[in-house]
Image (cartoon, helix red, strand yellow):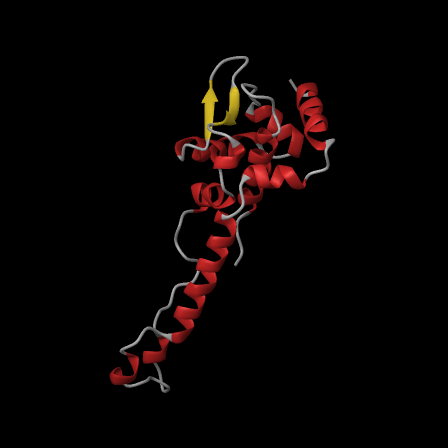
Length: 157
């Protein structure tokens, strides 16, 4: 499975926002500079997280983005699905029924075993990501990371 680069962006940005003090926001410009990303495209991705109810956005000179709820209530799966959708990356086109090797209809009454295995793998991936919150991620960071993140973002104001 290959996800777009923007998935990495929103995962890192959400983790960064989770390190901020309560009520503190970071602007698109700050986050774009922090990670050296294109601000207009990053803004689009962050807006998808707002639409999904994961971030809140405030306008104005002191505006920006912050978590819409505690990091313990936001899973990695919710973030990924907010920007990439929920559909499986595998699409079975039933090629087992085509060409010289086509199976008879009687042998295709059950779902394709390969499609079933791919669906199982996709579900395992989803289950794994749904079991990890932003708070869990923060718990694995070095203790000095949140203060360093807040300091470096403040320099970009």
